[in-house]
Image 1 (cartoon, helix red, strand yellow):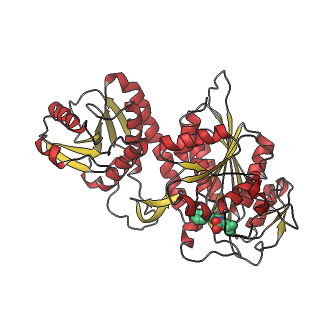
Image 2 (cartoon, rainbow, N blue to C red; image 1 turned 90 degrees about the horizontal axis):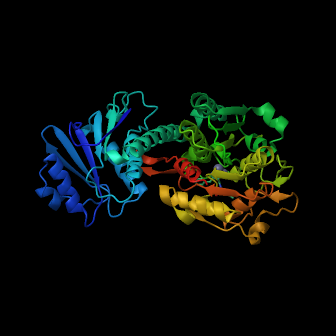
Image 3 (tube, rainbow, N blue to C red; image 1 turned 45 degrees about the vertical axis):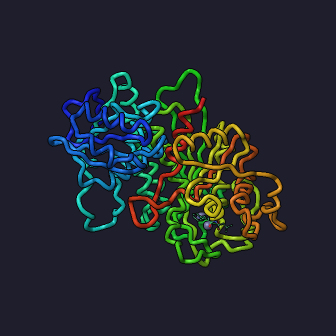
Length: 495
Ligand code: BES
Ligand code: ZN
Ligand code: ZN
């Protein structure tokens, strides 16, 4: 992919996309573009209202102008979505070289923000989900080829920022698509060892260190809760540890952020087996791990000024004679014993080991975990927001703000000790489920909190409703890479 910034509307590529916001400024924006390019504006004004996702095609000589509607006061997410669906739906009418005009535009604020959203969307729109088809559906997307180019038409004064924004949009999109592949892969194509391999390859390519502990080392380290979930599996577990630091460290030092992701490659529920309707979606139960992988990779690619540690405990949760049984009491890395009431509450078990390992061995300034943890979060927020839990108001506010900026939203729920009874066991130090179908997301969060070793700045994002969703890529739900952009934005705004 070639990226270019050009300050004029001369020598245009064969396809030019003109993003426009709806509202009072629309007629003037159309007129300015018409004056500059010679396109016929009269009918555009009557036919095109710039509603979110609306597309108006105009021809001028041999150039296609696509006016792309963004709706009123569009957000970053609105622009990204408009470009992504446009790129996906109009693939047949696009040329290998496309232009995006931000000249004469009626978008408020910094052009660079819109450039990042536009480039990110155009690239994400090339994503193809049919990985395992022997005969692919049609030709590949024109913008996915090696000679494809995106030319940003923008004022000279903002060229530098736009160039950087375009590079970021591209780099993040490539990582997000790699994460899509991983999350969309069926479980028989992604064992814990495959997740470890993804991280090893990525670390090698982008210059961060990766250590993958196999079953023996996991035993030696005493990661007993991970081993308990793995008992019913045909495949050994993996405990993946990643570390990134930029090549050039600022004199002021770096913040150390610990990220922990749930890497359940398939969740049958174990002996507390799930109903079969929608069980196939449980291949996405490593969405938290994928977010951590994506954030590590993109941070390294962009050389963000931060010290990141990533931990992914990984296994599937399967049914077998050896599977952990409801009522079993298991050990954990922390030393606390756990009564397993429900084997389907497996994510919190492997995260207990991941979080405690992070807190004890790396002592990060801030610790964030992401997990497709509870159906309760889906019932609360549907598919529009993650559940956010934190013992630190500043951290909660930072993650909330990053969600508002990027559209990867979260909403805070409480961690009051009133809910502590839900995880009290008669026979062990803790139990993994209250046994009652109420306040499930909070109960899970209270359980995790018991394993953070009193860390003062911890947040848990329950992404069960947002990691796998409807999109233009498929008729069924598919991966969103939720968390990648959120974490990168959070990191970029660290003081
Ligand atoms: N992976 C599931 C949660 C989930 C549900 C993710 C729907 C994505 C969509 C998790 O391991 C689970 O099964 N949670 C149970 C816990 C319960 C048994 C305490 C749940 O939420 O029902
Ligand atoms: Zn489960
Ligand atoms: Zn699960």
